[in-house]
Amino acid sequence: MTDEQAKLVCVFGCRGSGKSTVAKALVKDRPKVIVFDVMGEYTGGKFVRCNTLSEVKDAMRARWSEGFQISYVPPNGTYHVEALHELALLVWQVQATYEDGRDSRMLTLVIEEAHMGFPNTQLPRDQQGMVQLVTLGRHRGIEGIAITQRPALLNTVYRSCAPQSYIFALDHEDDQASVVKTVGREHAEAVRTMPDFNFLLRERGSVRMGKTAKTGRITIKK
Ligand SMILES: Nc1ncnc2c1ncn2[C@@H]1O[C@H](COP(=O)(O)OP(=O)(O)OP(=O)(O)O)[C@@H](O)[C@H]1O
Ligand SMILES: [Mg+2]
Image (cartoon, rainbow, N blue to C red; front, side):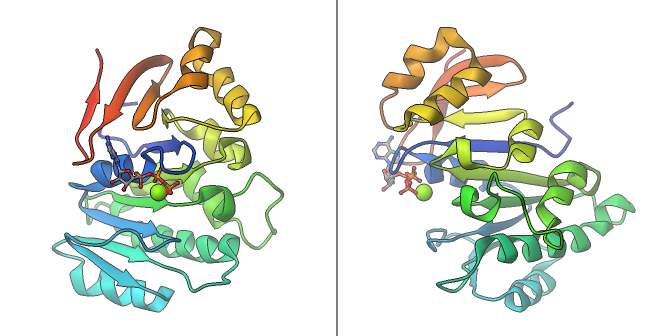
């Protein structure tokens, strides 16, 4: 897999550990970005706020040629699985232009509170949009950044397809245990004692340490 291919990324960590800071840094220079922004925290810069899927469609259409950063904040009380499924279908549809060669730009979908939108439970048969996106999205240049405090509750289809994870401090023992399985026992102590704003970066078998600054700057130890 080269860096030119659309990647799936996981960002795990407890409340306030630095997850959204790293996600914002990762999407800063991406050409087309949509955030499933449950708490409405992606503002400033080029970000445009939308509250319905049809607003998302209009915002993309209006900015398609120059690129966009869209924060989709579903209304309070929304069933996240269904809302994210519908967003996934829309992203899949618009990125057909990538597959047929009309547009070489990838689209990055950021999913906040991903354990709610794409939980590790049986999904309704008619709400498999995220499964399609995760399994086949690479052909349509669709990248994903799934953010959650509870990695053990994130859908395993996503977790098993994501070659890269940022692992911040985790406070549940079962979450620590589930990430230790992927980073190896030699990192168990680091997982258990991770300070805020520091992370392990797991990338195709290698594991490195890193940290974020408040400015969003990411430093990774060689
Ligand atoms: N290196 C740092 N030093 C000090 N403050 C930081 C640093 N990195 C981020 N912050 C600040 O800490 C707060 C929490 O960071 P952030 O929002 O990224 O955490 P989070 O893991 O997304 O939290 P939540 O679970 O609530 O979504 C933010 O106000 C952010 O600006
Ligand atoms: Mg956050």
